[in-house]
Image (cartoon, rainbow, N blue to C red; front, side, top):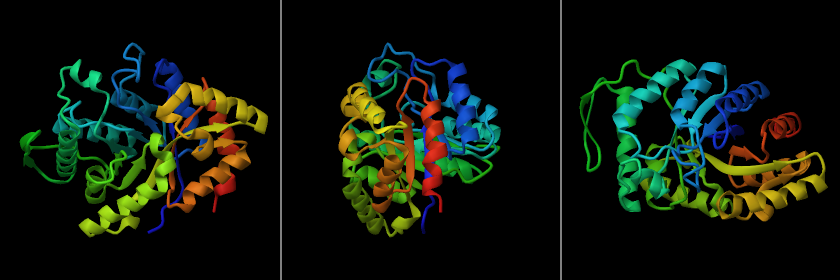
Length: 312
């Protein structure tokens, strides 16, 4: 199974107003991007004092003001919300969207936003177990008449979800763990997303996912590979290099790790070449954070001068 190129873009969410977010969502929709994404944090990482719009509220609102672009979280952790209630919430939002929701899931990592909101933050191993339980409940709630699940972290009894989502909701599993997390992706995921911090290790990560698929008897080609990435795009090489220097400082080791050597930056021609290098490794999805205070101009440049180069 071959997957077509998929270009997603993040919506402005941290230190941004809803008006700014709405304007971006509408423009990204009109520019032809395949999907739009928000992070599911309640604090503006890494500083809890940074204001941030809540993820699923934004998706519901964006669903009502857009027409064709898919919408998802990068990523929702298991202990923020009861999985059965999340299933109901997402199903309702997908009716608002007309069948455009992608369910992005991951283990979560920013401890203060869990504990200060009164949620548990167990060990990584237990968060992975909670993630696996969460996926099972979501899938059952969206397909079965009733769901009963008795897990270590989550329990539901004869739970119903009506109306169900208008389409089979694609599930994205995001993260870098090569054993447990990729095992969850191999069993349950339609998409595996590599985090920006491990963009330089994309090739070996894909090989690890393929091994997990072999272990559970699944064809790796069934899972689309996507990459979370910063994209710096400018009309000229000099402007791109200047922006690269600024972006490296802004994103530091989180989104900016290995950005110059392994990232996607430069003129439209060079950006297309960087994407082709990722594509050669087996990556067909790109979940993009454009660099800039207003991300609409770089998104427009990308849509007008990069997407056509990669068509076909």
